[in-house]
Image 1 (cartoon, one colour):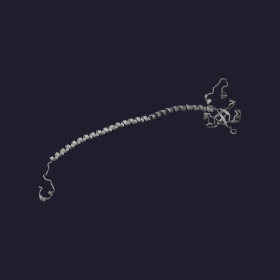
Image 2 (cartoon, helix red, strand yellow):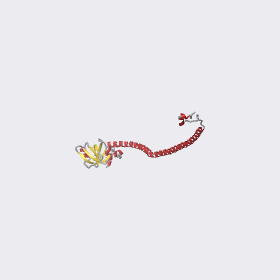
Image 3 (cartoon, rainbow, N blue to C red):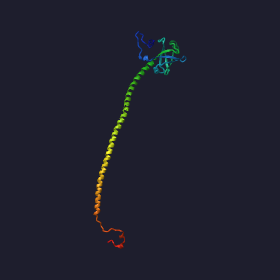
Image 4 (cartoon, rainbow, N blue to C red):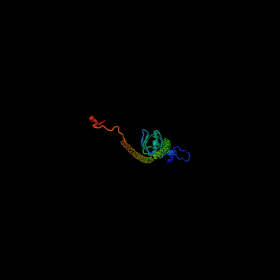
Length: 228
């Protein structure tokens, strides 16, 4: 059944068998006619063909029936959805007879435009895969940096905690040195204070007064004539 379909794709007339290309295989798909519009020359086809998303409005599609694969017709894509294709058939009346076009008919479809679109899509996929690999490598690099962030934080905290303890120890040592210095200076201060008091005491002992009598309240009465 399928060999007849490949013959319809323009296979050589020699007896040598020619295998269809992968692109041709990918551009071939089945479908069921779910609705016909005789007036507009339209047919709606239901198909689970995943690559139908690469069919664009205006793309040419050939179709044929199970009974006679060599008898084929041409349609144009008008619209598509996830499960349906809306096709316009220019020679609608002739195709009804040629491929027995009726609601519920099981047909095969092939599109040169779809074939070209699939080739382009594959090329784009290869480019995107390379970009994806490059981005994944960069993402993993930054991911490793993020994973190591916690370790860096812990190492930094440990280093500064050590410095903090060291600085605190130096701080306490400096305060202790200052207290020792204060104690030593206090001792020296007390020594000089004692010596100064001793000198003050001797000065008081050996002080010579300029007059023998001091003025007191009795000296205020001149009649006493105590003062010389």
